[in-house]
Image 1 (cartoon, rainbow, N blue to C red):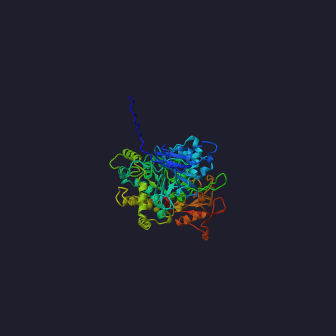
Image 2: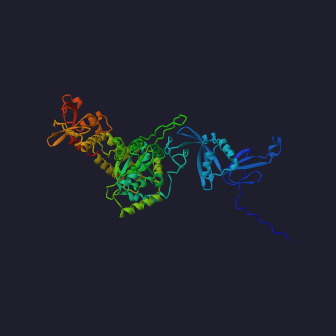
Image 3: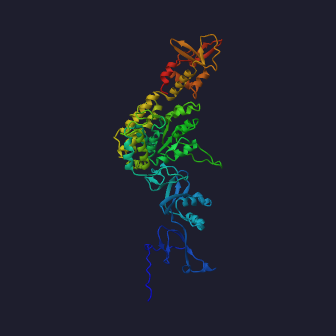
Length: 597
């Protein structure tokens, strides 16, 4: 008796038949069968003919044996790319890996070498290339000429096409892609969902101006260029463990994983430029200003606000492109920017302080918080820390989607003007700070209107007005440079009034005074301080004499002049003989004018 015939059951569905126009390349994302019925697994193939004799060239190709060489897992060259940052070209690749479909842009410049770095990157993304076919794989990529053309950029944020570009996602266009210039972590990652973030994070921020400010600061990044507000930042000031870092984590969760998205002041100026550029049109969280170099921190604040890095050159003396960005920074520290800069002996620059404006995040009702929603401080902090780790990266992109969908620039400008009018200022410098709080408030109110924040309409504006008002009451009105100059002279008198000044009417030389700054004379119950030129410039370190005189005159602090008023000095006969022209200053006016500086 013959044995029953075995049935072979194939678990693979019937594969479609292909008849390649040999010799040629082929790419298949699923199993196929060739013209001879042979199954071909997914991948890149070279479809050719086998050589059978020395006279193959004369043989009829239709009669020659065929060959299908597997080169790699499926990699399709889907489009040509042109980088709008520098004009360089590349190829847009679609990769089918065991972990799903991925995209990658390969710069054309890699074909000028062995291509090893490119292949290494592809292996890292899950592509498998036959080891003996590596050069053939590069040849395959180079020979592809797709008709589709994409624009690329190495910088996230708004693109010249009007799209908003993020790593792995472009909002508002399917013809623009983000092209990573370096290998690194994806700052704009997603986890959880938007509803979870709204319930577990945003709802708990209600009643906490510092926390609502952090969210508004993160959402305001995409609005800056649209409403014409310059970059800069806010600096949360408070003691250690007051809740400042939590505010930064919450702000970071708007765009990505807080543990990855947040950065630190502990970096060089060049590093800061890279971090800022990689978060363009979003937000840069900077934790603990005490980690920054006190000698460079003010320069770094200027750089962040100005939005452009320092130009450099290659070894071949070719200029590298400058990094650029526009964003708001959310900084934190136990000291203000000026206090940290003073550690190195540098005078505080009013411009730097205005670009990184201080916000009280330490002496509120519960340190950085105003409302704990029925919880203890530690529990509130812990609850929100866990929540931002579970839900993040959603609201920022959705906010941009809504912004692009509305497509109403005139309406946006009108809304900003309406909110800006509610931030009162009496000089251009305070106006710049008011602009920043206004655009943060606008972002919050827009997100409320879009249904993305579970807050009452008007609450984001009210919180920003509160914090702006607190700042304004601390610094006082008037010009910031004037306040710094007057405060510097006032502090100089407090520090050196008894050691570097003596009575101008005591004709006995005071041998105890070294490194003399001037003299004093009585005016009723007060003293007037008579500064020589060098000590006045020393007291207002960082400012020229003409600027110092302007500030003193504005405060009516120069009280005596000779007939030649242009000098702003009075001629005195000084102890020990001789005469000297001195600047006569009433310190009580400095106390009033400089108290808020």
